[in-house]
Image 1 (tube, rainbow, N blue to C red):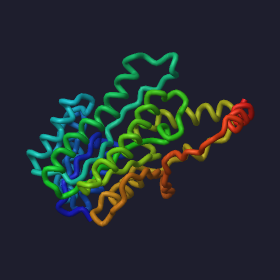
Image 2 (image 1 turned 180 degrees about the vertical axis):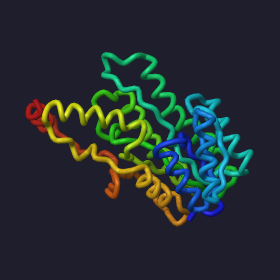
Image 3 (image 1 turned 30 degrees about the horizontal axis):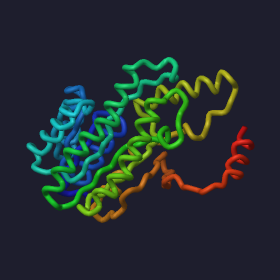
Image 4 (image 1 turned 90 degrees about the horizontal axis):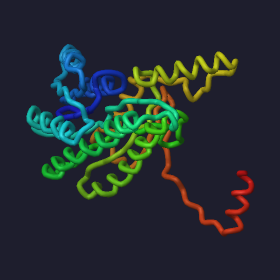
Length: 271
């Protein structure tokens, strides 16, 4: 499906990012593997080579503008082009708002939102010059769509990525650059601590474990990413959720006009 395409995948040394890198390589893409640990980057590159794929590694953080631009530049130097960008790099620093440090807020903001912005800007500048279109896929979360207690920083940046996705889909459609987002639910190194805490709390309180947290695998997400990235796809400006075999499509928030009396009724009813 992706033969000859060059795919840059940030945060692709483990979890969902690694699964996407391997799946895209299997489909014929030339893959730029990115992470912040040189050994982990090389392990994924070697694994792709072992299955007959083509890959190169870039050890650098997306958390700064300079770092993100370096990642894009190294990919272009090695492969000569970028057809697909997957903004996957992410971290969590979970705390309740009143306990959250400035550092915990800023680190999550830098990796998720600044990283997505900076990588996207650099790649789009290249794609516009080539004038052959392209595909951008951003990783959001149900935390950004619905909110999650204890993740005010993570929820905020993932909601920001939704706005970025919808805006860029409109800005870039005249250049045939498609922009979509995926809200994945999968058991990874990043999500496992959260899920384990919820499991322990449910057991302590003798409550059933919520179906919402019964998640699929990174490979399930990778299959959807490859499908959206394929040239035959024309979808843009959409947000899809993936949890195992369950795939959903989120709509933009709807707007309903109210009279003052209707507003009073809602406020009173909610209270």
